[in-house]
Length: 172
Image 1 (tube, one colour):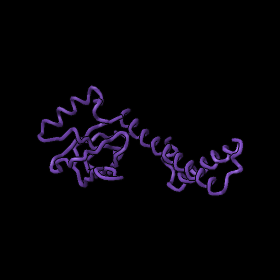
Image 2: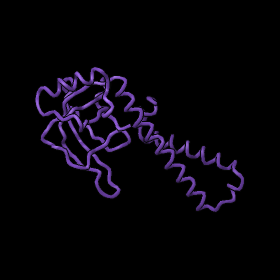
Image 3: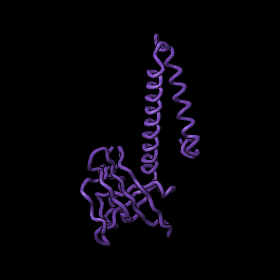
Image 4: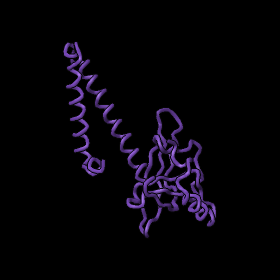
C-alpha cells in the first residue's frame, strides 16, 4: 500500500486502468459476453473502471485511518473553511490548520466513511482537537466533538486519549 500511495497520480490512474482492463478481459470467459454490442461493452468497461476506482479510494481512506490508529498524536487546530454536506449531492468539507513541532500544517478533509462533518455549522472561533499520525503529521483529522474552550480542555483530552482512541472519534 505504501508503494501505491508513493506513486505519481498518473501512475495510479494507469494501474487502475490496467486492473480494469484485466477484469474486463476476464469477463470474456462468461458465455455470450462477446456477443454484446459495443455500447454495452463500453458501459461494462466504464462500470468496472468506476468500481475499481471506488475500491482504491476506500482502500486509501482506510489506510490513512489505520496509520493514525497505530501511532497518533494530538494537537490544537483552527477551522479555516467549513462547508456542510447539507443539500443535494453535497459532501461536507473542512479546511483547518495546526502546529506540530513549530511547523504550521494546513489540511483539508472531505466527509467520508470515517469522518462525519456536522450539518450545523460549528463555532469557528473555537479551536478543536486534531488527531494526526505522529510520523506523518499531514495525515490528520479535525475532531468536531472535541472543542477546546479553555486551557484545561487540551490536558483533559490528552489524558482521555492516553487510554486509547475513544469510540466516538471515527464513525466506523
